[in-house]
Image (cartoon, rainbow over all chains, first blue to last red; front, side):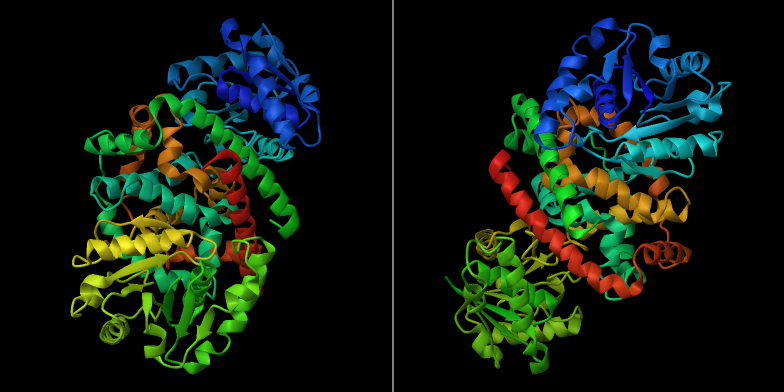
Length: 315
Length: 315
């Protein structure tokens, strides 16, 4: 197994540390703020206990995995000998540019440098680097130790070898990489989520549906099939002759709707009062934290179910 | 329990029959083509066996439920004494208008008449009826005995009492109704699905993502949380202060993307060659049927998992 460096020890950095250590790597975490790393190992120990209870540690004990994670005082120490560096600093372009300059100077020339950014294109903060061909984005959905999908986003100058090594590294750690061919605002997942949310906010703003109707339509409807097939396989199986047959039969429904979706509702306008009132009626503000714990428990149970179903019925 | 009539014995009619009979109702199916109903009970018996094996029959034996389903030769016989009529004829406006005229003439004045249509607005085929106030759409996602969501879509003249009785009837049968306030093309679920598919086809057509990347991003990414929370609750839990905080922090990402989504890609154009080639590489045409069986098994296992998780962790 290899050395992996985590730069930035917030929730995303900690989550990546868990995923990479579970895969057998020695993980060294560094943060510019020593206070930030203070509670990191305790937090990680708690999560590892939950994962062990759900048999989501590849048969390992929580302690074994925890032993592979260390917090180090110097950035150089974290980077030394690493095959992969995962950067998790704030979503601020100037910060990213400085951090990437520093890492590119200090890291071995063969090391891949990946950013967890969800909002910034890799070309915007790696253009000035000598080692820019080994830089890219690896964007997770939180928490990556429970949600396998991770987006690989190259800058125009990222080498094919860097992409290939990153892909293999992620697959080995149990991730399901999405390989973007070129960088694009929002990458793939936030663009898909955004398209769905735009329609959801429009339906609520226009009075056709309640917030809860939208959530029911997804959680008790569309997302059941999507959660093990995805949207293309879903439509491929929804017409006798497959996806081409589906498009021939049903595209008319969607192309009729399309012109009605060309108007954006400001999510922060009047509609947010409706959305917030509905959500706070179902979940008081002070219960948000408890509900996040509930979400992660349900995600763990779902991850365990999916693994079992993959084994029983095939992927 | 009550009498329920199913008009049209294709896959959707049969699926509703299973759902309503499982809830304890006596279900009478009728089809204008006697050959269409021929295999219906055998087909239903097979599904009921699978549901029993997954403990999805409310503790009943498959035979008990099957005994509540009968195929009748005359429409009058199906409708007599029914509290709810579910219509499942072809998606053709003239057919629907004629069938609804006939049913409205024959059915008791108190009976609710619901159409399973996914594509036609209820005002288009009930405007001419004397009993139009008791007509509406109840649109399922197939198969409704595994997917709880069902859209209730009123015409402008549908009475509030009709909507309320339909809602109670569906909830009692284990469904999760979405209450549309007014009819609208595509209802709620197909509009949400369409918004996501439009972006998916654009990403593939423009060469940013493969078909499989999109499916991974949903099935191994976004749809995991969506499958038990829905998209609004997901974003409500994705910022420390809840949904308003999320909108304040992240709307900028989505509003930047919005202008790039104002161009529709013809799904039946060049992109369908790419989509079909990718799908057929992963799943040959002759395996579509087997994969549909796989999908339904996975849906059953997921339904059983969700019920268990609802009990263990709360909904």
